[in-house]
Image (cartoon, rainbow, N blue to C red; front, top):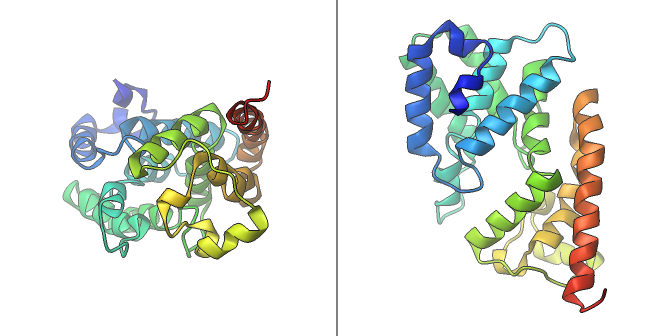
Length: 233
């Protein structure tokens, strides 16, 4: 049903979209980075794009649909040497080449995917890449963000809540707050070291506006969680 929401490319070529849908259903088996996440990012990207002139919707929609195509491969790789943004850019390019898209378009979509992740080393340069990056980050915060944080915690066997000292916690992290040992992590720590800082990493005015309220929702939730864990009212 999600694929009936497409604005531009779905109506342009349903046969190509059916191929992409089949590919995504095969690749996106992770509960936190599944097809539902993909479509939320897609819809947020279109919402942001509606406030900006000159956006190439075909590039943006293809990039938003394929941005996490390699996510499960990264999450299930025990050597931790896969970057799903880099691998995904290549996988997406292969899919688009199979469907007959031009190399110029493929290059633009590939750039969006390579630069979309929070912890990536490459920064988005085009407006389509910036919108995708913003839309993906927005889906990590707010009520959806709370739900996904606990989904991910379950996937990695993290505790519900963990006391920590923010000033000392840096000893257990890698660049950009990536945790060495996931069992030393928890949703409330993820909020403190990463998610509450997402508005600082956004590019578009519309995304920043949406992010303000979403972060407030998460702050209220984790404050309440802390009180309940401590047996306070």
